[in-house]
Image 1 (tube, rainbow, N blue to C red):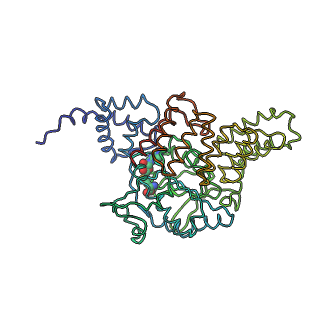
Image 2: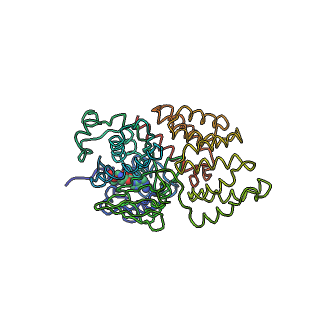
Image 3: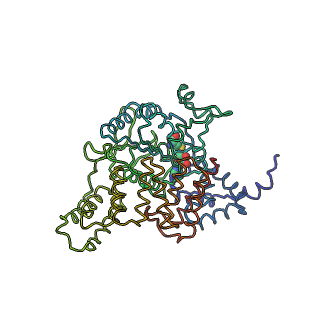
Length: 497
Ligand SMILES: C[S@@+](CC[C@H](N)C(=O)[O-])C[C@H]1O[C@@H](n2cnc3c(N)ncnc32)[C@H](O)[C@@H]1O
């Protein structure tokens, strides 16, 4: 008879059925992930290893600690890294890839060229080790001969910080190439021991970050999940509960530009009623397109406002001459605009802001909000002009410098963006978002020590602040949650170094 090691006796038998069910409930509440029976052995193994790693006497103690904590703490992260299924490979699902290569991407590229707006923004949500978004980078390289003239923003996010670190490192085993044409592997991957490293030219096109689809805020300029042309969220919803999938789909609609596309995996569940997403079925593949004004979207036009938004907009759409003499009388509109911003109704918010940003009744804050709205609609040049106007009206508006920096970063104007963030920090050393944005800028410039320094500054501020306080630029994101995100980003960058 084989005897069980003492450590396994001590901690292994502790995950009884009730405890296991409680772990599953907690994971579902915080991440939307529903564990299937065949995944339970992973949960048991990870819980046992977690006990050793974090010094919990048994699994019940581990569970208790998780129940007492809020959001995603390091011990919960550890559990999630052990139970999530990160299976992915390059050029996965040939029918979807063909649709992207032969139809959807060429259409988007042509529409952008026609409008003179050479930019594309794509998000791989649940990106695992990055194979999906790197595949997209390779496709774009193939399809855009003058790619150096374009601003291409490719973002990959995942809840599992271990896989994100691996995505940043860009190193893959043979198995990841099982659907990759050998000519592409030879052209874009460099052998490194028994693995392959992605070519720096492709790697630098993509930025990765930690994001929990069930709890984090999107669309958000902060996580670069706004004004998107394409969202890939393939083979993620199969692991999530219905409520989370519904919420994700409705938020994805807000992240997309009009006519923007959402692609799920072939077996993913979908709930898209009342989201503004329309299912388009081709012979082999289905995908979603965001409804909008006919012909608008990739060329950057406005989308139609909802009836509620229209009503709100009409309220403040009177000619300026008819508005009360005092600009302060516009204050009630501020609440209406903030409401529209919170529900990402950019078109309606813009109508209101156009009404209040009139000569003689201008305020720096309204112009700053207008900049935010325009940035969220993908109208970056106009957004930049709105920032400049805001700063003419108030040269010490730190929020406008921050917004200016974010837009300049989006336009790949790194040194000017850095200058704007520095000005923000000159006005307020403890401006959390400015430290964070500076860190992201440094990540893009491959200055990892600089990025880690700025992230550490941000973390210190987030930990010292009121945990319930919300970030100014990301409604719903509390200081406590942001501290956890920062901690993850720091670990990911350290691991990827
Ligand atoms: C099977 S992989 C899919 C990878 C890639 N999209 C593909 O199709 O090849 C599923 C990924 O979803 C991630 N995931 C699961 N729940 C998530 C959540 N709540 N937020 C963010 N990512 C999540 C997992 O960590 C995992 O990396």
